[in-house]
Length: 137
Image (cartoon, rainbow, N blue to C red; front, side):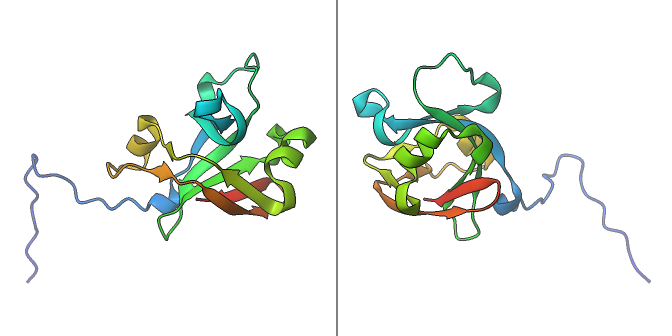
C-alpha cells in the first residue's frame, strides 16, 4: 500500500533550473568601457526592450545563455549586424575582448547565479549559423 507524501505549504519547491535552456534577449554595445565604448569587446549589455536606435555606439541584439560547460554564450542575431560590424568585430571568425566585462545584475538574476559572471579578456572563436554568430566566453 502506497502512502501519499504531503508537502508542507511553506516548504520550498525543489525545482532544478537547467541554465542551458534559459535565454535572455539583450542588446550588446561593442567596445571597451575604458575607451568610451570604442575598440573591440563588450562595453555594455542591456535588456533588448530598452534598446533604442538613437545610440551612437555600435550595437547588436543577441540571445545570452549559459552553456552546459558553464560558459557565457552570446548568439548575435545576424539580421541586427551591419557588414561594418561583422568586418570590425567578427573578422576571421574571431571576437576579441581587451578588458574584463562583469555581466550586469539583470543577467545574473535571470540565470539564478550569484557567482559573478564575467567575460574575461581574450580572443574567442565565432561559430556562424544561418541566423547567428555565436561566441562562447
